[in-house]
Length: 384
Image (cartoon, helix red, strand yellow):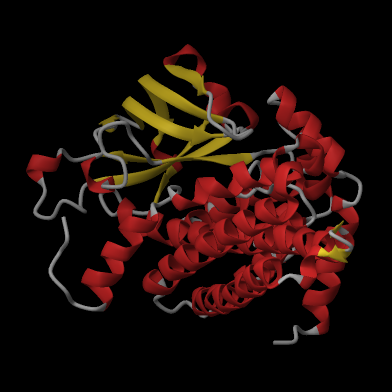
């Protein structure tokens, strides 16, 4: 499917930014477990991290389809868009459900880079993907809320000024439906002080994820997004955007792997012939490519539905599932094609291999997506 000229030019612009940050840059950061501040700054200054912010607020005013192209192209270049992508997917909550006052206060500063919105506080140690079971509680006290509780695997808190936070405002035992009584807040991390504990968790890739403890963190009432108690509905738009955008990153990862696997298969000679002449090497690459293109079509479908304001929960989940599987398959194919060189850091396959493996389990596991499709799309009995 041929893209229009606008998207082609957008991709070219992203490639030009990424060319300033070659694989050596990412390899060095990975070894040191450091944040790619230069890359994030360059993507911000180029306007790409403000892609979804309307022009009236200083952004590019693009749709999710275009945002997908930006993140896909970044990952295809060998970059890791993970340290920057939250600034895009949190727009699903803030742009769609924030008040006009909130948008005028925050969006221009986010678009310019004056404020960073890179943290999305939902997951908890004892709730996991069952979001309705979260226990972090925001108690109303006059003109503010006081937040207590814990979150885990919340990324980029140290490199963010703001966080979108989901917390209970009505105890679970007091609501008619367990999806009720949850509210969404914009937390100014600069004002949290020592009432917010941040402990970094070491994981297998260079990802800035943390365990958080809230001990009386105060949030002004005007920082609540939408109505009290309806927060899960608002956060789902952010989650759908997150899944579609991460699916696009997986497409980019898969293209990274296959670009390199194909080049390696053509160039590498063993027993007097290029290894790509052997069906045992060629056919897995070809199959991985076919699966990638099929996954990409679902990503495009999901993004199109989101952009039109139509329901896209099933499509967002299936896009995430198929793209994560396609990138993991492509990673395995690249690893096999490179052989022993694949585990050598100098070739960057093993780094991207670790990065793309994350998306089998986050931000939602592939098994939970299958249960969602089985129950909510196909109408089968709930599997858990």
